[in-house]
Amino acid sequence: MSARIVVTGIAGFIGSHLADRLLNQGHIVIGLDNLLTGSADNIKHLDHRRFTFINHDVTEHISIDGQVDFVLHWASPASPTDYLEWPIPTLKVGALGTHKALGLAKAKGATFVLASTSEVYGDPLEHPQAESYWGNVNPIGPRGVYDEAKRFAEAITVAYYRYHKVNAKIARIFNTYGPRMRIRDGRAIPTFIAQALAGENITVFGTGNQTRSFCYISDLVDGIIRLMESSSNEPVNLGNPKEMTINAIAQQIVAMTGSRSRIIHRPLPIDDPKVRQPDITRARELLGWVPHVTIDEGLRRTIDYVKQKIG
Image (cartoon, rainbow, N blue to C red; front, side, top):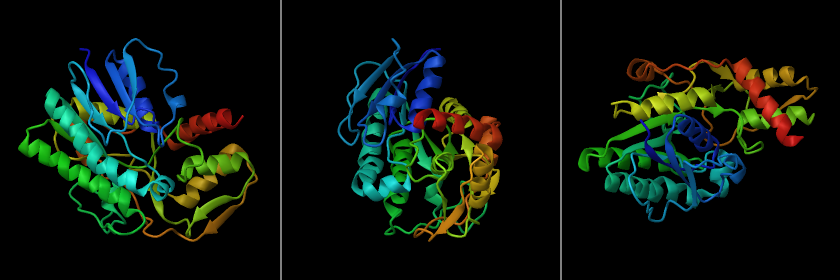
């Protein structure tokens, strides 16, 4: 059955892939973005009678005419480079933007889905991270503007669920990659690929023994849709539980691109998490969701995209 769905942050990496999937399923999509970190290129292919784009800053009142069945709140800067450059907008979209998006959902009687993040766990003292873990976050560190914005977003989302009875859901998204990521936005995979293809040194921060768990975008979108359509109102981790060191992912990218790039090391940024691995038991049990795309296949698709982008 067709639904009318508002997606904030529609021109971002994940938001644009969400739009593709929702339109392919026959839904009507209204996308909002102020293009601070999103790109119009990500949605220019959506020349579709069921898609509408509105250039709007969601920290301001959101007005949508007519029925709205779902509000998916994906607006936010999403890389360390972005939050260092845009600390106040990052805090505002997590707080004011979430408030305005929840207000729309409440007014329309719509289901609300929040794009939260594994960063709510901070530099974790529990490994792997389950949804029951409260986190280890430095509120005044350079990453605090993003971490605490998302933690506040979760708190206000749950408050609207409990007090206003909004059917609200929280997706805690772990490292995700694939086509349409900004190539040099500071995140490991697109940066390493761009450096390898250019024959530049691969810059790994710290020893490179810190770990991440990389989920391919199509798997993540599948998890989001399942959460959106579920009866669950608990936070749900969405990520690939296969844990890798940063050194290992850098070495694999060098090998897959046939690059002669050398891996060099730079000081580890403040509060950079040492480990990151989702416990996806809840997603598996409540949503029947597990990721399927292997790191080899996901990297191949992403390398092809970066090659195309840089010509």
